[in-house]
Image (cartoon, rainbow, N blue to C red):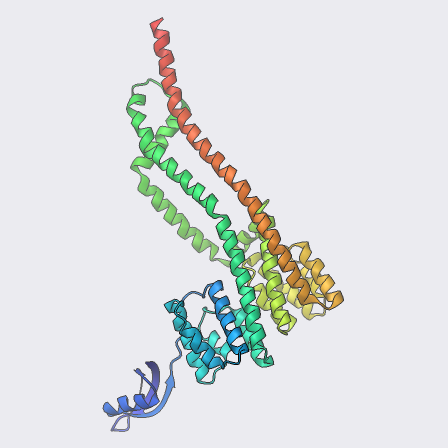
Length: 400
């Protein structure tokens, strides 16, 4: 069923407008006639996809299917029909692709149909497909986008998987603390109550244990409140700008983030430039894929400099947040006329460098978390044993 916005007249000639569902305009006319209304005009209400964007690996599958089917001589409408009928699709994805197919059948271009889906498809992909439609290179562009989003998904997946073990250790550390402070330590409270004085570490331990045992809900409230406050704060552009700047200035982590941002920008810029888009359009689109507001804000100056006739390498050299390898590669690309190849090359190298940097960071985090867990457990054990040994010494001295 399709939603139509219509204008009709009743038997008295009064104009009436409204919305209703119908299979097509003929069905709409029949439905209105049953209500003694006579259709004057009707317009289909286009519903935009309001959900989250489709995952990078699913976008890659969509592009790959388009490239292979169109390359095999299948019409675009039939290719979309085959994609929609794929049993492995999730329902939300199927709904998006079905709406794209519906729009294409009415004569709308594939890129425009994709842009109607809201945040479902990335702006870069839409622009690439629009350029391909104008130049007649849809097959090559679709295959290129499939490769691009496959690499993006693999890189993000490696980053997330590399952090899985440190996250498990962190959760384990919290669980151990909760068990020790909420169950083990309270078992010694009666014994400690009989002692005249306790070491400072034991007093602190008992205070923390009492707070966790009796006022645990305050910790939850504080945690939820802090999460909401930080979420709202980071939504403010100036705060996000400052946070993203700190991100690339941190020791070890900052270097890794620079490599990841540079690799992402290089890959995007190479794909756009290779598709024949103007360099200013390439920079505008590639900037939005970096995911760091501090770096993105610096592109206003870069774009103005390039528009004024400055070399791309000179303009990019002013950005704080990219590795020097990018500028060096762009210089070579400009001198040899192989800018897209050099950008792809530096992106490949930086993606490999980022994998190595991630492994190095994880290998550094693991012993730090283990050492932190050992410190917490050690502090609890010492705080419990110290007063007990002290009481034994006092008993021994009084017996003499």
